[in-house]
Image (cartoon, rainbow, N blue to C red; front, side, top):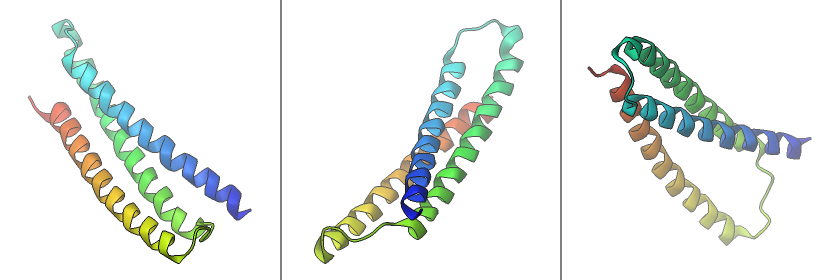
Length: 114
């Protein structure tokens, strides 16, 4: 059962990250679209919705990521490999946190500027 939860949580984690990226790209595409002036209010409303969808996706990524702490399967490759894996995971997550923060800030500026 623990393995099933590990797979489901990993799927949710990755799926939410992809949805966040998609929401960011849709917001950018709406921002750069050349549309008639009468559509601008509708476009801004759509961008706001995608911004909040992105926030929910980030929360799912964080919760699912925390959930992997409780469903981690084990140490298959030895103590040294496990130590290196954990160090690399920390580096990866710091880098991804910077990407998520920068992308969300960019999305915020597109939605709430002007």
